Amino acid sequence: MAQPRSRSRSIRRRFVPFLLLALAGALQAPFATAEGDRLLVFTKTAGYRHDSIPAAVAAISGLAARYRIAVEHSEDAALFRLDNLLRFKAVAFVNTTGDILDEEQQRAFEAFIGAGGGYLGVHSAADTEYDWPWYGELVGAWFKSHPPGLQTGTVRFARPLGGSWPVAWRVTDEFYNYRNRPSAEVTVISALDESTYEGGEMGAEHPIAWCRKLNGGRAWYTGLGHRPELFGDATFLAHLEKGLLYAASKSEEC
Image (tube, rainbow, N blue to C red; front, top):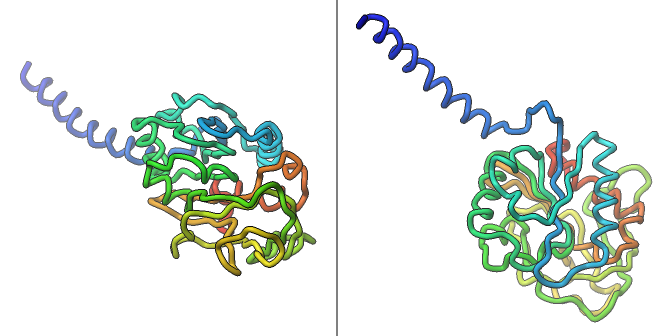
């Protein structure tokens, strides 16, 4: 009877490393699933709540549908478990505010990005999780202030959005000043012209949208998106579409 037990141990020795390799591969390429591509749109707030959230969710859902990306919208932080996050290509923080994830959920999100996941941040995603240094690096810069009320200013895009979209765009929104300029690791994709409105504090090239790769994943952020009406604007939707495609690893250009 000793020989069969020996064969059994040998089989287990060959099988266990294979299983571990398979699990490691799943973490490195978690998105090749039968479900297809999915996007988690997260809108939890622990501070100011934007009335543009419903319009934002609807707009992002419409953009995602063009590329057969299924959208799951939630404000339940309990979804931030690694096994659950790995169902998604990317997670969008859409007008989130304040402290919205506990430490365990934060670690799960860090692991998700490390496994190749994407992040899409909209407007007050930069007014979120000030005590989480890793998130500050992911979003690129934290909110500092904004001029009173809404203003109309000019946004200049670093590269054309495609088609007939303008390189310089006049838009009415709430324009953020940030606590810091985004690091040299990010690619700034659009900037505010501070000469076209009042209250800017970041100089002639005032970054308002940028992207980067980080720890195996990727991140895209826009500071625009305060007004509900903006989510029906064709130029803004073209801008947001590029962010969605980049965060979901469907485009290398952000």
